[in-house]
Image 1 (tube, rainbow, N blue to C red):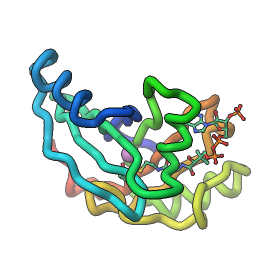
Image 2: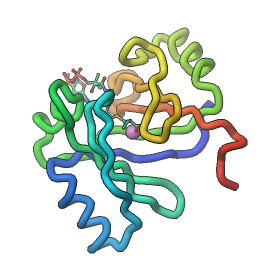
Image 3: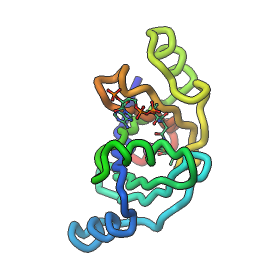
Image 4: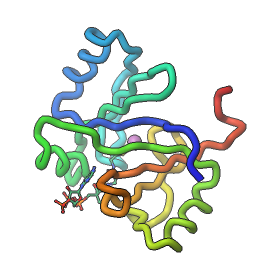
Length: 141
Ligand SMILES: CC[C@@H](C(=O)O)C(=O)SCCNC(=O)CCNC(=O)[C@H](O)C(C)(C)COP(=O)(O)OP(=O)(O)OC[C@H]1O[C@@H](n2cnc3c(N)ncnc32)[C@H](O)[C@@H]1OP(=O)(O)O
Ligand SMILES: [Co+2]
């Protein structure tokens, strides 16, 4: 079912400071911040050769990342995003197997303008998983 690793997300208490470390200390290609109020986060993507790092900080009230940072004040790995080619089929398989698809169980539009869902970390060995639908014809070679 799963394809490429799309991104590893890291929750951070200070987005500008985290972005500066990736840019100035690690020499990475760091994108501009983008607000995603529908997800309760502000995001900076760090482009690596083979994948991306998504630096996340809370935006607005009831952000899932705010709760994570309350429990992990220094920040830390928040989720891992895998690509799937047919998210509806992936959801059916997971729900039939008893896995919890978070929210209302339906895909929402994620940071790349593509459908995403999240799977409960307690069903995946303590790791919050995001699935993003990427059609094979859109994948870079
Ligand atoms: C920018 C858009 C998008 C993209 O396209 O890339 C994004 O990435 S948005 C990212 C933010 N969105 C989300 O995280 C949505 C999905 N998350 C949730 O629905 C919730 O955060 C959650 C995972 C259901 C947790 O919420 P809640 O149950 O209210 O939190 P608790 O603090 O009570 O945690 C319960 C339990 O789960 C453990 N936990 C919580 N978060 C994580 C995590 N990120 N990774 C691993 N484990 C996590 C937490 O420690 C608790 O465990 P126990 O203490 O053992 O009970
Ligand atoms: Co993400």
